[in-house]
Image (cartoon, rainbow, N blue to C red; front, side):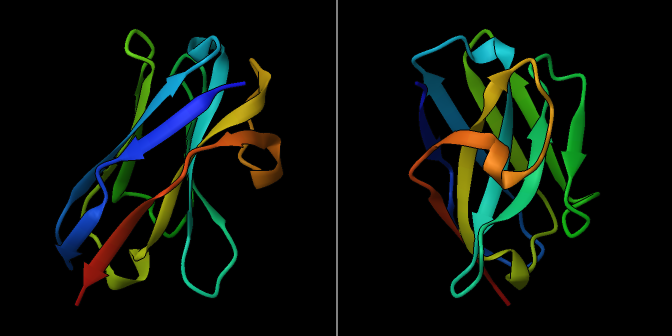
Length: 125
């Protein structure tokens, strides 16, 4: 099992930036695809971005493409989400997640088995 702890959330004005970080421990971080998901009040949890175990492959939700960037540092067991040009509709709790299967790349929520506690991102208009 892997333990995930997110940080970096907060309140920001529309057009601003935030950087979320997720620290992982407990198993071989560098062999698992990592993802960021978010959940707004009254809505289902949704995919935001994913990065392969090596960092060579990434995927983004259409709603954040061109504004958000996912990266990872396997030496430090961390994955980050740089969020630029934030919009009020980006307001949500953001979750870091680890894929269930080693060496497997996908972006379906049900494929991710370990989750952090979440960090709140609030974008004011």
